[in-house]
Length: 50
Image 1 (cartoon, rainbow, N blue to C red):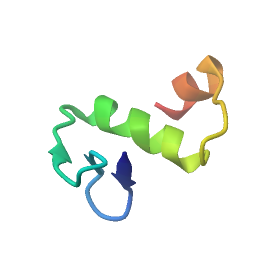
Image 2: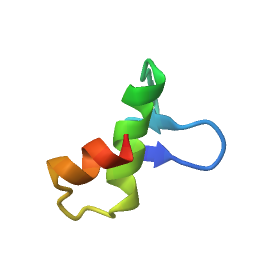
Image 3: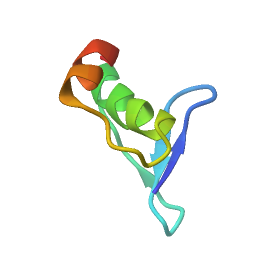
Image 4: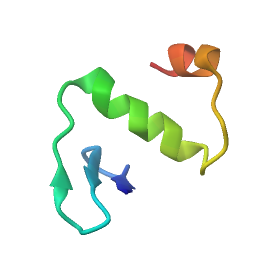
């Protein structure tokens, strides 16, 4: 999966087809996870980030 963080947050499947992510909070979750570069993120950090 590819996450786009510059400009509007978006996502694309490995095939390149766009993945629809509704709502601001739902878009911020993969963005927050992507910022950690594959490292685990605690629930507390996710809640604080959202």
